[in-house]
Image (cartoon, rainbow, N blue to C red; front, side, top):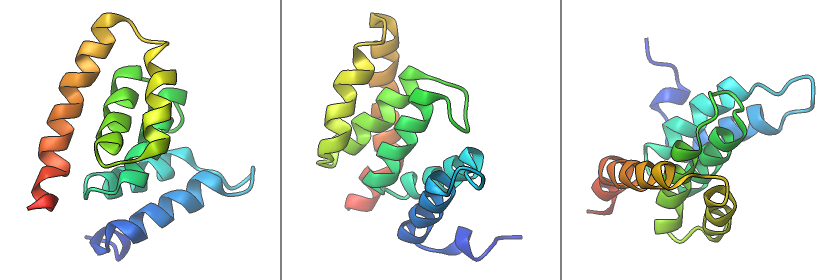
Length: 120
């Protein structure tokens, strides 16, 4: 069964992610924030891609992965996100060369799958 939010635009999904991510201390739910940011990111939302990257970097709602963090922030940076571009330098400073190589490969895969189709 598809819920109303799953059938909505990436803007609605991003806003749901924001509600779960930024709720007051008792009501934050990083797993739900991750779910909704991911849904919006996969529809091409650069804001959601940046937020998803930061959840991966911090290990909030998902296992920490600098390669995935780097990849999602790089995809957002490809779409002119200045915040994501700044975060890339921070994330990269904590990564090995192998993690950066994997992050670049993953970023290309994500871009081809989730951004390029929306640009045509």
